[in-house]
Length: 211
Image (cartoon, rainbow, N blue to C red; front, side):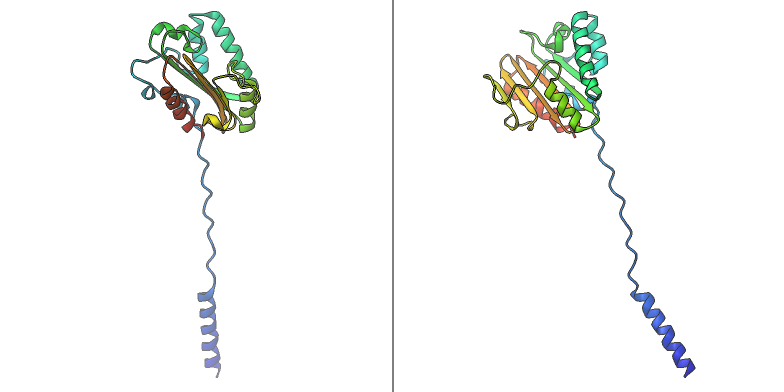
């Protein structure tokens, strides 16, 4: 009898071990995707039409301001002040890329002239989305969003731009401009003497990298 009880006890113990629910192992949380660096988010040389060359100073915004100071100290001072305003609202880094059809146009503010073809793209990164949205609303390099109820000809604000709620565009050739906020970024694209398709391609390329 004692032997039978021992066997039954062992059987119960084995069955108990086999029916134990395995301990769930928690999967590690995926790491958040890092934000694009502004130098990576701005327009790249491979994304502009043939015939446009990059300007000296394209890259970090501080480098551009230093470079253009050699051509026009007043323009450089104005850009430095505008960049400082963005920094005061939370910008941690910024970059700019400029492409023109003539080297002389690179000396103009944001490479914008009445005759040369050019594309300029600027991106600034902020600590959080709220800071970026407030900075966009205050104006990026002097380009302040128009009031929703006061949209002159050629100006679109909001989702109709294709760039989100916090965005506006100006499309009156020879100048086309887009300013918008997305994620922790603000972006500005200015195109002169180029067609609407080129402008659209430029804003689409930049917007895709604002993660």
